[in-house]
Structures are given as C-alpha cells and as structure tokens.
Image 1: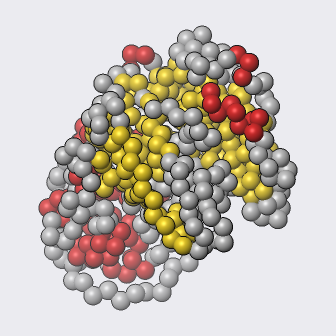
Image 2 (image 1 turned 45 degrees about the horizontal axis):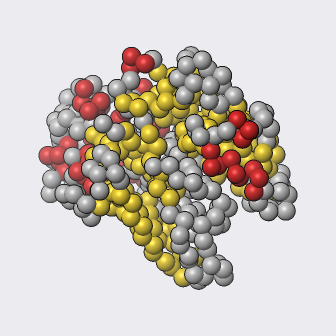
Image 3 (image 1 turned 180 degrees about the vertical axis):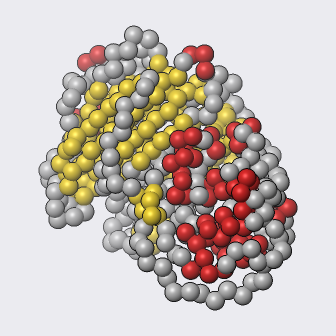
Length: 455
C-alpha cells in the first residue's frame, strides 16, 4: 500500500473538545407541532440526521438506524444499538424508564456534545459525536431530547416546553492546554515555535525513542495551539539507510522565508511510514479493542507540523502528543494505515470541477476508519465501494475541508481482493490559476485515509 509521494500520509483523526459559546439566546420561533416526539422528528432529526440515516444509505446500514418519520420511533425505542461496545454495556438507543434511561441511552451519548469528553475518554469505542461532520445540536435541541427521554420517551403528548428550542447556543473549542503525560507510553512536545505573518510554516523534527523492543500504540492524544493545518507522526521504514536519519531536535523547514520549497528536506519522505496524526486541534483516538499499531524496535519518530498564518502578526505554534502503549496480550490485530492519494488532476480557473479516482486492493481488508483530506477549494468529497455486493454504495461524504468527518466502522468494512474504493471530489476553483496537487493549503489534494487490518 506504500506509495512514494511528496505527501505520503495525513491521518486526520482528530476530535475537537467543545464548550459553551455565547449566553445570548435568539428570539422565539413559532412552533406548530402537537407532540414532543413530532417536534423532535421535524425540528431535529429531519434537518440534522435524516440525510445520513435514511433507508438504503451506507450510514443507515452501518448503524442499523433509520430516522425517517415512518420508522424512526420504532427504530429507537427499547432497541439495542448495533455498536458492539455500547450493546455490551447494556445501552438502548432510547429506553422508556425515564431518568434511568437517560444514563443508558445510546442516542443521548451520541448527541450530547457538551459531555463529549466523557464519550471519548470513557467510551472511546462508541464512535463520534453526532451529527457526523456537522455542527453540534443546539442547547435547545439537546434539552428537548433530554426532557423527552426523562419523561419516558412517549410518542404522544407534550412532555417538554417547545420554547426550549429558542436557545440556539452551540459550542466552541476549549483553549489550548498541555496534556498530562501517559501512564504507559511516551509524550512528545514541539515548541512553542514562531510562524511568520502571512506565511505557511511546515517542518520536520526527529525524535528518537530508543525502545528496546517493539511497542504497540493503542491510543493517540494530540493537543495543538490554534492555526495548525495538520500534525503528523512518521516512522522510518526498514528500507531507510542510516545516513538519511536526521539529527534529533532540529526544525527542518520545507520552505525558506520567501516561500520556496527546500527539496533537500522533503527527500526524507521516501523513507517514512505513517503512524498517526490529526487536522483537529484536539485528538483523543482509541484503536478498537484488540487492535494496535506496531512501532518497531529502535525506531524514532519524525514529527511533521504545518501551521498556516494568514494574519499580519507573528503567531506561535505548539504541539503535545501522547502515545499510549498496549500490552502484547491485549492485541488481536495489528493496524495498518490506509492511504489513497490521487495527484494526477488539474482544476481549471473559475470553474467547478469533479474528479474521480478508483483504487482496488490485492488482499482482504477490514477497514475500521475512514476520513478525507483536501484543501480549501473542496466542496464535496464522496467515497463509494467498488465491486462486490455493495458496488456503488456511498459510504462516506464530507463537505468541510478543515474538519472532515471521521467515520468509525463497527463492524469493519470488509473488502475482498479486486474490490476497492472510488473517490469522487468536487472543487470550486474561484481563482484565476489552474490548481494542481500541492502542499500549501491553497493548492489542492484528493486523499482518503484511515486504518485497516488484514486476516
């Protein structure tokens, strides 16, 4: 799966912790539905959830949940989730035992954005906060769902004041703060470092580990100061000769102050293997139970940070990374990185263009995470299955290039040899120049990445 490219890997598994925004509440809106359940269906599920959770979509197939009006209530009430970890913990999508059911509701766990730190820390295998890739539900929407569940989740009657929907507040990122070091693992720290005004700074920084035996990563945490485009961790492959290993503790910039590439510092990419990374300011990623990523004996890590400063002032970047190690006895499958990269495209100026690229595989693959990577001109990124009984099925879609949704697949998507994935990406090139593959955020990319394991 390894391809020699300038941009070998962007694991953008990342998760933004969010906290309450402004205290301002918008003016009331008229509401004309007769029951609380109808209000939830019309004001929350239909605008925010049904586009993914409709019959026949990949997301509905993956979760087993359809939220269209005709079936939503029966799909939710006293039905165990398809997510194996949540089902094993005794959760229901929505129960009917009032307050007791709130604490055992998988729906509530998945939409309760203010409590997402609990979800990602205590229940990392439950998947991502919903709606996937979209804005979190408002305070009012969450309060309506909460009151409905506490009232026993009926499909008749008004059990919550519709006026709660007038609270339109959402959530914003928590301020940057250092990570406490892991109990079993290693912490890496970059910076603070300067990023010049109106400049994109990207560099590599080698960090030797010197461990005496293979280690297995089961969890990755990252915290970054605002302004980061991405942060990546690489290891040197077996094919890397000793002379290419860089000196430790040196910032090896890929651009000079004039913005020209320093190709000498990019040549190292031919010898690097991806490990992990993120495009989000905060990441707390747990591999599925029994799955871990191998870091071979003696391998150091090459850290790659990219900050884009579009202001007139110097900014400062900083990155903390925690790698949590697993015991060998915990491991059933060794994770590998999925990296599908199309560099062969041109986007004409002042035009919207859609490009498609198909990748097929030569082995049986169990894909358990997917996410896209493109730059600022991307308006839609879709992924379809190629071959087999699910041929043509849409399994992933993104509309936000800065924060693409992270799709956790539980159970994994299994693709047989000769099957594959098709990337279909739409770009709006509103500039006067032709855009091609490039490393700056105002160039473009078409990359799909994630993790998988084999038999």
